Length: 235
Image (cartoon, rainbow, N blue to C red; front, side, top):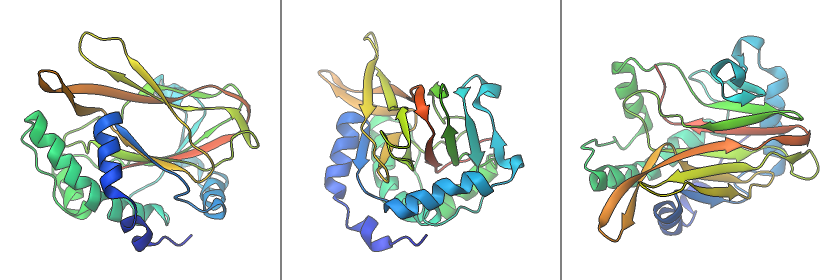
């Protein structure tokens, strides 16, 4: 499951940054070859039971979550390193706009040292496997401090063939407004960069923080497998 640094660097990063600022997410269609996506999905068959957690235990829905330890499989290890370098730029821009006062280091290894000093050592990146009637409730991966404001999700199964239903959903809550729902049209091998919890939004009176959550709608038939890559660890 090889990954190519150059392909990531050749993405339209100006367009990605613009979409993140406007929508809070950016689509990366075809980031994974179908064969690589299938290989990653197969890890749910080989990972030991100690890595498997039910989201029901935290009132997050139904299904199975397979958590990785600190060592990620390729291409996820490459993603964590190369994507972080790019996303740290926008993370620092958002931090400055919101007046948070946090600066994110340029390399993910240095950011992880910050996590460890803060007592955050529990990896959050995982595969999710949802069968018929399974779903993931609206949630955020925002436990701990520091939290990285962006993460990556990808779909490792084919909609309409491997499963039906199971749409990836986001909501955005702006002050004194109804939540705005968004459905990300992921296909096999597609990925997306999403806001972890909050982002700046420019209104008529300047910037303010909006709150985002994400979910997976109920799978009606078949089996849906996806992956979430989170740059920060939890306590």
